Length: 190
Image 1: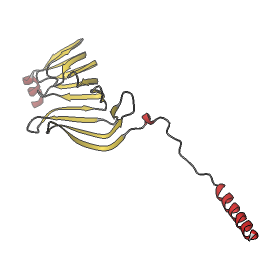
Image 2 (image 1 turned 180 degrees about the horizontal axis):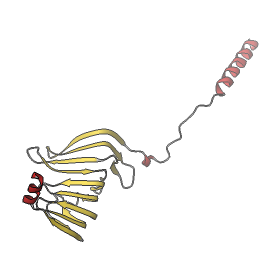
Image 3 (image 1 turned 120 degrees about the horizontal axis):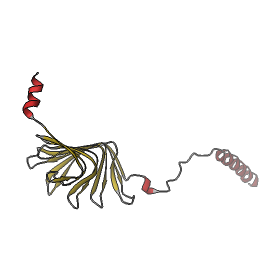
């Protein structure tokens, strides 16, 4: 019986030592959880409602939520397109940006790159960086701004506005260019 036990022990040692020769490749442990997003979603189109009424549609190629970062934020690094609806679900206003970050605790949007906005009146705004503070209901920028209205184009550096982009102040105005619709239409006919 002792020979059988000894033989079994030798066989086990040989088998175990042959298995232990292969090292398993392990991924490096994640040391900082805040560097990973809680959510990574691709090809997103979502509707947002307020009090049961659909108010917004967001479209983006990539939506990342970093809940452990300080401050926590949502990242739209591949661009974002936002539409605001009226009560009949017609597009009332729109915003498009190459990159956007939403700081959820502060209720602050930072839009950057080519930022294009169309307000409820049809005015078009173009800038490089735009902040939208939902808490104060203000929109602002300290960068170059171009506003195209039906009868003129206004340019300047910096502006402050209400969140509907209907009441605004432009700082450091560089120019106001009036558009003569009759002359514009005549030149198109030639």
